[in-house]
Image (cartoon, rainbow, N blue to C red; front, side, top):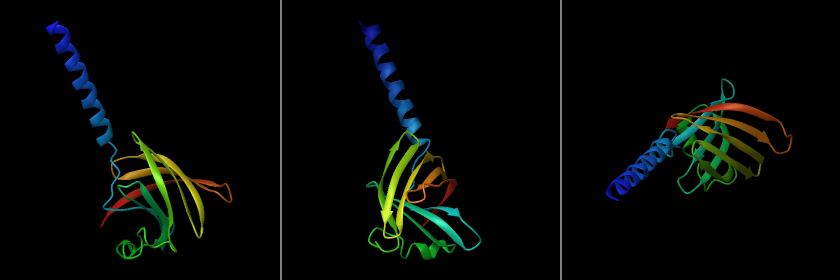
Length: 134
């Protein structure tokens, strides 16, 4: 009986440790923005919040300036939605005054590989967003 109980405890501990390790291998970061450079002057930016909110927009490449207007309360300049993350996979849809987009991808250490689909044109592009801290 003791041997079976010990084996059960070892299995449960091993399973919970592997779940923890898997979730920390691809953490989403909340203290900055994820950026994809569109051209020499403009970037696509994403910002995530712990409450599940995600923002998307485009900006000039001065990332520190982005933080002055890229927040939840600024409904005129951002697309807003709610993200879902399972293991390292992430997906969300954002909407706003300028349109609607769907994203799906994979979170890595400092990047997110995304497939972005514009709802109006139905065109898709692949992008790798890189994290920049505040």
